Amino acid sequence: MIRIDILSVVPELLESPLSHSIVKRASDKGLAEIYVHNIREYGRGAYRQVDDYPFGGEAGMVLMIEPIFNIITKLKAERDYDEVIYMTPDGEMLDQPMANRLSCKRNMIILCGHYKGVDHRVRENLVTMEVSIGNYVLSGGEIPAAALVDSIVRLIPGAIGDEMSALSDSFQDELLAPPVYTRPADFNGWRVPDVLLSGNPKLIDEWRERESLERTKKLRPSLLKGED
Image (cartoon, rainbow, N blue to C red; front, side, top):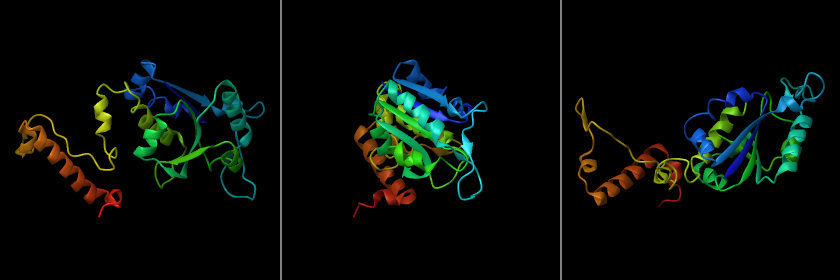
């Protein structure tokens, strides 16, 4: 089982993605424990302040170190964590190999940034890993955190009905997945490739391999940078 603690100033943004589909089924089966903590509960003073103006006069607000330190310290006093992950646009890009590695961890904390980010001392002293889902900026780290959690949890054995399905996803073998089709075999004259109707596993596997390679060459040639 894996345990994931998510720290956020807007926990409501995580309610839907964590309460449906594969992530919910994994939680219901006891394969994953996912807890969302409101950083504001650890804020300063009667108003639970969690953000302040940055030194140096830059525009925008920054999440303060104190409430984040307090919540991470509390969680670490209860159990050991393999990773404390900060979701940030300038982190290491999330890819399938990373998801595979993280799915083998037992406990992790995911910190969602907000506003202009977090006091950099959090990143220097509390965070063990920084993750990005793309070269763009969102209003906060909640959507990236939900994407990371989904990419991890679906790989846990038993999380999806057909465990072989995850192994055939795009990027598992550094190739894009081949096209998939279902009934009817002919719709408006748009036909499913005959080989998929042939019943010949060898020909079908060969077709899928060719299609994966061609799609990768066309759409993500960077994945083939090691190819001759």
